[in-house]
Length: 257
Ligand SMILES: [Zn+2]
Image 1 (tube, rainbow, N blue to C red):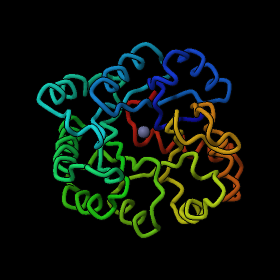
Image 2 (cartoon, protein in one colour):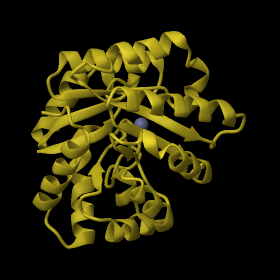
Image 3 (cartoon, rainbow, N blue to C red):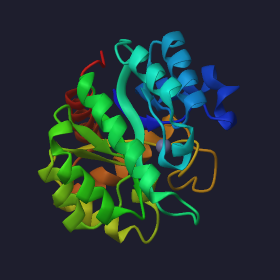
Image 4 (spheres, rainbow, N blue to C red):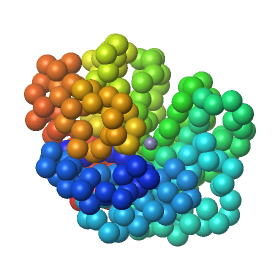
């Protein structure tokens, strides 16, 4: 069984077809899908679909691009749902300095607040970091004591140095469709450097569809394409990658059955 550790099947592009999306994933042996919230509304719908489909689990949290919406009501919502048995992590949370006009201070504040919630309610975190490596590593080091439940740096494509910093903090990383892209030299070198117990697989669907379907709508069913590429890079077979990454995901997300 494969686990897609970071998906958005509640996205507008997939939600109307969700039953078939899950079915197609099953047919490819992808039997657990961790759906990530990124806003208040998508965190609510993440819980709704997790409650409805046994193979779907939820992360709840406010993505840095939506940091303005973080308020007492949202915080109460996270607290009220932290003990739901299908809520496996707080995420996706983090820093994103990609688009102009971002509010760096507010992003940091909202990120740290959610790290605190994860710590208080014994949940791991799923972290999004884009064009913000320096601040991200600084915050994670300063608040290392909040990372006792572990965490996943999702869609990781940084340097080997950054990878080592992340691993030192006890976090794992997940690899997605980018590893299959032509010119994915960086991903290949990361994969050859990373300890085998430190990574999981993700689609980040509906985005980042792996080759040979790059540019199309992505779905959890594409996880084996990513696994195959990683297997080829490491000289292992796909079954070994399946077993390793499923074990790693279950070690991190303790509520997965
Ligand atoms: Zn995502």
